[in-house]
Image (cartoon, rainbow, N blue to C red):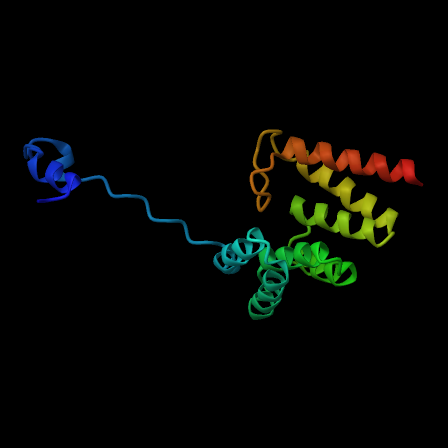
Length: 171
């Protein structure tokens, strides 16, 4: 006995030759090619991290970033994993590599602000957060920020403003 989906397909009537779909069936869109070749590796690294295997994910990110030195996402991911492990000085180095690759990416500047704040560099952190606000101002408030896991520009700018205010209060 055939599976239900096979039976349905086998029993479905064929379209008539006059129907346009018969002449030129719609082709599915090809998956977009990632601009950053490290994006595919980043998916596996994120999966490790999401399962709580942060040290392994950090090693994998370091290895992948060394193999693909132009991958902004891998350097950023490595920085965030190092930060999670409390290795703040190393996280700053990795975040600066990401910022070197694209200093206009909001999430890179936000990560740099977090890391510099943990290092006690309030002026550097405030500068990074202020840059986030400025960069987010170039986008629509409800526009998704690249590499932010769905964060919207307006909310990221709001979070950056709050960090600038917190740094100012602490001074």
